[in-house]
Amino acid sequence: MIRFVALLLLATMWIGCRIEDRPADAAIRDATVADTLLAVGPPVLAGDTTHVDTAEAAIAEPPAPPVVAPSGLVIPVEGIQPADLANTFDDARGQGREHDAIDIIAPHGTPVLAATDGRILRLFESERGGLTIYQLGPDSRTVYYYAHLNGYADGLAAEQPVRRGQVIGFVGDTGNAVPGNHHLHFAIWTVDDPAQFWDGTPINPYPLLAGP
Image 1 (cartoon, helix red, strand yellow):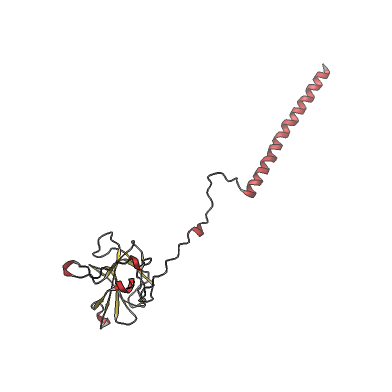
Image 2 (cartoon, helix red, strand yellow):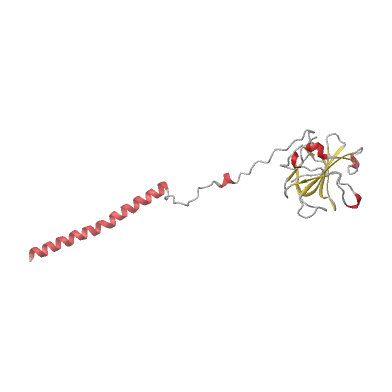
């Protein structure tokens, strides 16, 4: 009987020691897992997305280089190629008027470029042309007219010099353009007196931009 009690006590002590050891072992294992997570991070699961650096993602594509025609003029709408142009110079307009210009179709807000070097004569809003720009060329005789703009480039002002290919405005549908028909109305004419820049002899821009 005494031996049985002694064995029972020994067994109880042994079980107690095992029970006390288990939390310590578990704590050690938990600490090891925690250290691993801090060092290498959690495991990557199927479906996790690759990290994207937001600073790199915010870098915009560079603007397309200006398209220079054989005449030396830049096609005055960014991204437009000679093959995209249509000769609408002789098209009839209301009240017996001729177009005396070409319409360059492009998405709303597309940058409008100075066709050549020169200076800005006037920024003007009219009923027909909407937001417009009058530019005098380097020969001081040729006027370049940009109409139906959605807006002007920041800081653009009268008497300001501009360079060929410089952004001066943005394509829109202001004035008498059909709403949603976004395009640049582009005209060229020559004047004897730059002080009367609004009245001159029309020149068809199409062959100058599209080539022969």
